[in-house]
Amino acid sequence: MLSDLEFDRRHIWHPYTSMTQPLPCYSVSRAQGVELQLADGSILVDGMSSWWAAIHGYNHPRLNQAVSEQLKSMSHVMFGGLTHRPAIELCRRLVDMTGSELECVFLADSGSVAVEVAMKMAVTYWQGKGQIRHRFMTFKHGYHGDTFGAMSASDPENSMHRLYQGYLPSNLFAESPDVIFGGQWQEGEMDNFADMLERNHTTIAAVILEPIVQGAGGMRFYHPNYLKRVRQLCDKYQILLIADEIATGFGRTGQLFACQHAGIVPDIQCMGKALTGGYMTLSAVITTREVADAISQSEAKCFMHGPTFMANPLACAVACASLALLSENRWQQQVADIELILNRQLKPLLNSEYVKDVRVLGAIGVVETVRPVNMAKLQQFFVKQGVWIRPFGRLIYLMPPYIISPEQLVRLTDAIGNALSEPEITFG
Image (cartoon, rainbow, N blue to C red; front, side):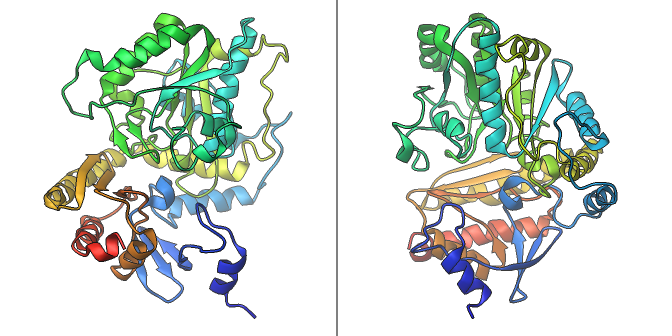
């Protein structure tokens, strides 16, 4: 009989992993606070928040209680023709958090599905106005998920998506922002985007972008004025603006939502990842009354989308508990403290010949190396250092839970410094 890890290696497909030459896997037996306990008893400080979702850490008593209390009444019920208090409470909280303009909420399954929903909303909006618009515009180096619509709006040269070119719809990609967050703004930086929008605005359903932080497409941080100007241009040409806040929402960048760095409100906003504090898959798409009304005037007279597990009561209940924790506003100081330590610990790594750039914003720290890392070797090195960091490409980055202690965070940053001092491991 195969051991668990042998069975896993032979039969289970992990994300972005080959079945013939899979990356090593480490079996987790327990997660508590900011720590992952492996099956062999070793403890790892988590620097990933389980792909940026577990902002309150693991096994949180209030989130656990929310799930267990909800289980006593129901774990799931279809949302077609039925409703329930956890969904209503969650949507109340989201409407309150996002402001008065965004008021109509669609609850979906995952981040990628939220993007699909937002794109379908934009297309259906124009149908309701008697127009056919199927194209989307965005920046290069973006990432919006791995489903087909989301991939079509992600960087077409990204290795995750270029395999599907020819099948994906053809969308418009402006040059990605060059001026970094905190850099010197020049109005000419918007020329390419403005020109492309002017030439194509009658065919564009919406502009979609990740506000301030481009995530898996390169972990790039750009100037808030880009976002302000995009909002102004969308208003000028009466084009919808979709903000993909799946990775940036709920405090990660130092603002509750990254759009707030620019003081703008999108027409459609996607949320996911940290929405449930990393407990269950759930996403939300929230839009304006004007968009919702136009969709309701389309040929179908409704929005044609309905996931089976839409508004799952367990997920909604734990999301409410997660947002209640955020409403206590401890995250603001926590994220500020994380940013301070990341700047102090990571910026000196710019002196390394193997480092091209170091970027820090809120509870995000990125070390960009001069060439791609050897993920398998580097991850094994980090595990031996007692930390969980999952690099990709030329990026070694940290997005830890907000509750991380200074000592735990320094363990993570020290591990990155140690790795760069051993280039034969880092680059293999």
